[in-house]
Length: 222
Ligand code: ADP
Ligand code: TYD
Image 1 (cartoon, rainbow, N blue to C red):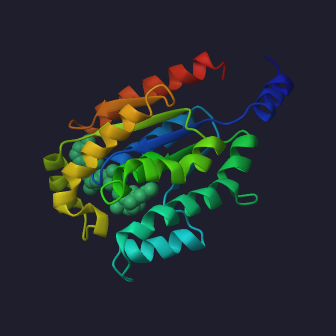
Image 2: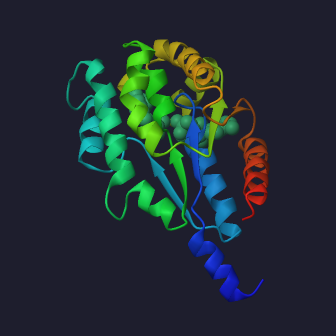
């Protein structure tokens, strides 16, 4: 292929949207960084991001999650949905414009997290309904759910973190993990979700994820 054809191909092609999910301490940010490096080595343009976003609503949410401000946890569900819509549609730096220009986005959490975390306090139907506009605007090409036992997560949080966030107290980890599985069952057929065993060395998990993603890109012809 000539250089010209190659750049035309990149301009015309929409970027991929890959999402990492799992309870706190499952290794999402570690794996996201490793996949970003692997894709960059293949000269695939990558934009790593996370939720809550860096926007106004995201900053407000972080102030609740860190305990800086107090709020009834039920207000988190609409705020996360609003932050997500803003993150998707924001002019220039929004996820939709970036994907349209051909960038592959790697996101640390998306609406599956809302379904799992918020439905500990609210009916899951309600949380799904609140996130429906986000689902309609952008579904992940692939959600990578890194599954660890609550014990693994607790050990990693205890070793690697100075503080745990409001929603990730020890007694909630197991409940949240169960809600993730309930959400995965409910979205079955609508979403492509890979469940990866996260109870092993980071390099071995990264190898499995890279193989899966590269073969997905190859089958898309890019
Ligand atoms: P998350 O983003 O899901 O909360 P992190 O990637 O921040 O998880 O990982 C949580 C902690 O566990 C960090 O200290 C990280 O270095 C460590 N960690 C990540 N993956 C592994 C792994 N496979 N084995 C052991 N420790 C890990
Ligand atoms: P995150 O930034 O992933 O924390 P960390 O990098 O430390 O793992 O997640 C922030 C918190 O927000 C986490 O406790 C999960 C919670 N959360 C929700 O409750 N609902 C959501 O929709 C999202 C995206 C996150």
